[in-house]
Length: 226
Image 1 (tube, rainbow, N blue to C red):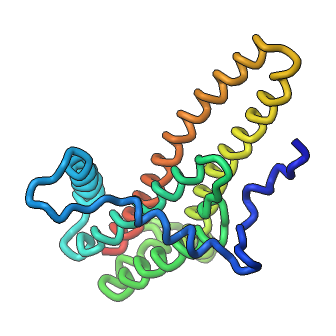
Image 2: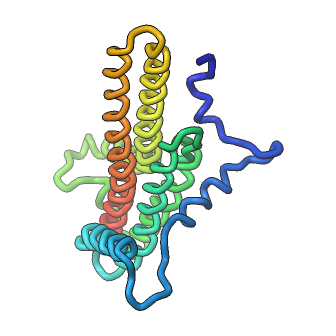
């Protein structure tokens, strides 16, 4: 009970060496693969979900944008599995680290923006100045649009970090309250424990939704620049 509230967000170490890299590499090992001609139900369901997600995100893209399909599908699977593994007891969630989320958001955002400037620079520059803008407002709008463009990767990373961190903190607080009430009032303990179970189900949904939202926003940035 005396454990620091934010102790679960500290990057773990093994013999003084950071173990975050090993944790990040662990989720891909959980994705089942099949060497047989006829797949089992788990593989079939997995392939159906991947095709459904890929089709939903790639429908709005042209041929150039669809070359990113493997990257986007890999991204959503990685974030979803990492978020779900973080819900296990005594586990570490890399997506609660803003530095890691920025490391995912900035390269993807920069690649999409650079692609837009290379392929259709006129349309890319047109975003900085909407049509019909009054002349006195042109400098201000250019600055505003530039700032809004530059904060896109920060917004991506902060959104994912804040949602995952808030859920984990809430689960930690309610779990601590359940443990404290277990020796005081049993009916209250059962009520709080029920709330904890419902919150856990909600956090599972949030883990999947946030993975989808992150990938969808990257896909939208890509669509705007292809």
